[in-house]
Image: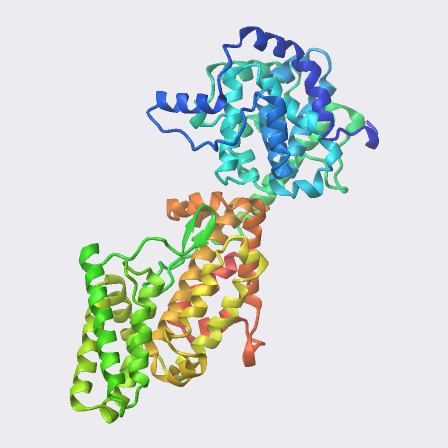
Length: 584
């Protein structure tokens, strides 16, 4: 086959349509009375005792072609490509069976077009690799509408739409099982049809095994690396598929590529240490981010406290009243230094009427350090009675914030290793370039903007301007520790996800990263699976920039290396893990 005759993605619709004409007629004759696919999802879920997925009320039934097409045009074009690809993949065994009886070359064209569409959607930008004319709207929606003749099949398209509406990425949807459990799982007839199709293909020649194995993986939602999926498409100019020589030659070339890839992987395994890298657990700090739906965010739940929520709110209100009462009394005297009183009022304004978030709690805890510093002014300038009241209020403040076990644990950890004056001075300088990098484009793809914002706020104590905060910096050891532990917690979460992404998405995959993924927390593995093939590499790039970038007067020293040098007990874990990621 000449290059101009090599199958394109647009050949997909032309190849499927004649093969499915008899099937469409058969499905139409057997179809049950039409019902809403969204309603069908809920019905199927009720049979299993589940609530079913949330379905947007504005999402039309996929069986209503005209309305569904108009609705899809309002969404990203990748939605229509992925929905159509999955719909057509579900009926691929029927298509292959019918085509095989007349033309093996058309079977290869059909399989190749599916593999190429799937590769582009999963591993590349659909907009970059698939021109609009490659999959016209009618061809794109054909696979959806032809399944609308059968209530059972239309149910699964509705489930795919629901998954996209609920923020599952198109790439991850395409990589998932073809028959979602929420819509009833794989119908009983699929295994029978696919088994018969595979047997006929292999009877025509064992070289078809590359495609029977490929479809079995697609059917089950098994995921492979980009290098593996690339074996089934024709993108390498140095290793073109021999279209002129027929299906057998093409399939044998695909098999040879897979063999070569496996040999390369076996060779690499012997060169990579098998022991998985160790990423320490997060430690108590103002910022302890968590992965939620594929993004790194600050937790929404308030921290646990020793007191019941209602009692805790009353205790916070009592503390706020004590601070305000003392501040107003001092300011009414008029002949004492008012700065500590003004600060008490600013702190009181930040005490919430509900249990505080972790970041706010820790900022309130560090306000105690500022109030301790003001204690010397109070003892020298205020009357004895007011000074006594000031220190009583400080003890009340300390007892209240210590109602939170996480703050107590932080204070205990911070007291174990005293920072040197040089380390305290370096802490903010080291954290700032990392905070800035967390606002980059690659970071924003997976890291919520509230995290760098929280780091910025943490560096400036409550109620102080930047210049006053700098003046107090030398005496605020706990704040320096909190800044370091907070950025350490962010780095741990980012690097863990980068390791998982490397194991899942790397061209060959690191044995050490793969071993880490096996031993990682199940929630991390789940969140890594939501990253997708665009955000996963962005995460690895972010880690590399953090590791290589310099800063300030030590711009020649990579930021993370400098952290490891200055604070080896906290950041010593970074270097061996970064080696696994290919940074060092």
